[in-house]
Structures are given as structure tokens and as C-alpha cells.
Length: 270
Image (tube, rainbow, N blue to C red; front, side, top):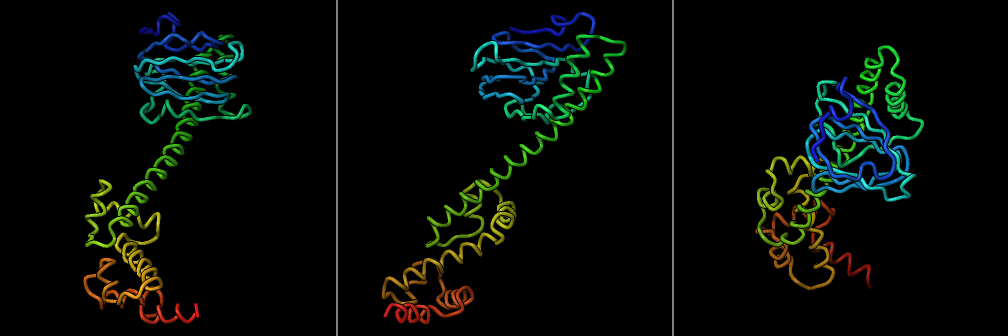
């Protein structure tokens, strides 16, 4: 079902209404902006192919023509929404900053919720110049929502950033014994080497290759403690092509040579 703004108010480019229960159950789409506040209860909303849970205090904006609908997941009369709807020219903002599938939650006593309620009150009473006041409240609501959405995006990005580093370290753990370059590791997670390097420094406070080298010598420690393999054999086994480099890096990390490490371990066990 395609809704037109004029279906709501023939005289204005905005409208405010309160809906209860199954009043929002029909799937519909529209070109105008819909600012939705969950006043009470809980429900489920579907926007395009995305489904999200809604609870009291959730606030979000739908500003495209994707089909959507809401169904209560509580008693019908316990589910209430306040909708502020308006044509895009009513508020001159960049609507692409909002994430309709990630609603922001505001406490009942927050200033933002009071602005939503003020919109409803002003629209119901329609005192002189109510349009100006509603427009002002809408800008304040959108500003608060944009800030909350930005924080949501940042948290999402931090998690996403951590996923890249996690996948890169997993690749290193599985392939540390063979010759690896920074480009090899970066390609394994679909990033450029420079970008992965920045993520590693942010998340692990080290470089990709430093992480690889340390992981190799940590594996060497296990082999030194559990086997009688020579230092040369171990260095080749963990991916060092030059035993001198292995000696150098092992001592840099642990303060002793591989042979001294093995000797100290045996003495501790005896």
C-alpha cells in the first residue's frame, strides 16, 4: 500500500498521530518521512527484508520508500506509538544518517521524549503558530537521534574493526609456519595492507608482522619444552628461513637464547 501525505492532512506537509495496537499492521510505503516513537509496549517491525524488535522508548526515522509494518508482541491495547510524519522539505537535514533498523532508546523523562510529546500536544491543540513550534521540536528530535545513531554506528564499526583483526590473527595462527607477507595476511581478510596495519595498531598496539614473529617464537617455546628437536629444525618449522634471525628475535622477546630457554625449563622441572 502506497501512502500519500495528503491522506493524513490536506492542509499541511506534516501530521502527528497516536496509534494503538494493530493500527500499524498493514504493510505500506511512502515518500514522506516517518518519525516513530514507541510510547508503550513492545512489537516487531519489518522494513524491507530487515526485522527488528521494538520496545518502549525506541525512536527511529523511516525516510525512504521501503515497505514496512509493525505488529505488537504484547497485548494490543498496551502497544502505543506516536508518529510524526512530514514531507522531506519540512526539515532540511540529511536523512541518510539515520538507521531505521537500529532504533535509539530514550528514557521516559528525557528531553527528546518530551519534544515528541510536545509535537503531539501542539498538533492536537493547534494554537497559533503551532507549525513553527512543531518544526522546531522536529529539528531537536532529529539532532538527538542523529547523535545517538552516530554512537551506534561507532560501536558497530568498532565491532566490525575487531572482526577484521580477529580474522587476520586466525589466518596467522593457521599459516604461521609458511612464508607470509603483510600482503598475504591483508588479502586473506579482503583489506589493503596499509589499512590492516592501521587496524592492528589500533586494536593490538603492534604491527601485523610483529604479531606474526611473536606468535612464531611463542610456538617455538612449546616445541623447545616438549621435544628434543634442534634449534635449526624448530626455526624452519615455525617459518624462519634464517636460524640467525630466529635466535635474534627469540632473545629480543624472551631475553635468552632458545638453548638457554630449553636449559632453564629443564632445570625448573628437575
